[in-house]
Image (cartoon, rainbow, N blue to C red; front, side, top):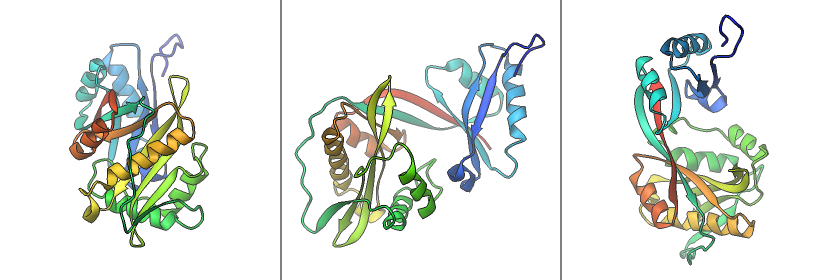
Length: 248
C-alpha cells in the first residue's frame, strides 16, 4: 500500500496454503504499518478480504508486547482466540529415559508411514484449538519433501504394534543460528496421561543432540496446560508469547 507520493505506508499478506484452505481459513503472514493511522489497517484488511471468499476465519498471531496492533485489530472486529507460547531449551543434557515394555519407537519410513502419521496426528489433535483440521497423507508427503526435513527426525511410538504417538524434529533457524524445531508431538487420547509425551520429547531431544543442535524450540497453545507443564519440567523456557486473534 502506498500514499499519494508513492511511498510505501503499509503491507499485508495472507497464508492460504493447503492446510489452511482445508480448514476454510487464512492466516496473516504480514500485517504492518509504521503509521498509527487506523484507516491504513482498515484499507489493508479490505484489500485482502476479497481473496478470502469461501473461508470462514482469518486469524493473526500478534506478539503480546505489540499493544498498538492489538488495539487496531480490535477496532477491525477481531476477537481473541487463544494465546500461544514459543519455548526454547538451551540445556544439552537429556534426562535418562527408556522405552517401556511392549512399546517401541521407530523412525518414520517415507513412502510407507504417511497414513499412519496423519491418523495419529489427527486423533491426538482433534480437540486442540487451531489444529482441528485433519492433515492428509499427501500433506505428510509434502512435509517429508520440505527443506526442513531431517532424516530420522520423525518418529512413531507403537504399543504392541499399534501406533499411538508421533513426534517430529525439523531443521530451523533462530537468531541466525541453527536450531531444531520439535512439533508436532501428539499422543492419541486413550494413551494420554501415561508419560508417553515425555518419552517422545526426550527421544526427540536426544536426536537433536546426536545431530549437534545446541538448542531446541517448540510452540504450545496457552490452554494446553498439560503440555506446558511437561515442557517446563523438561527445562524449556518461555521465549515469546503471542495473542491469536481472529475474524469470523
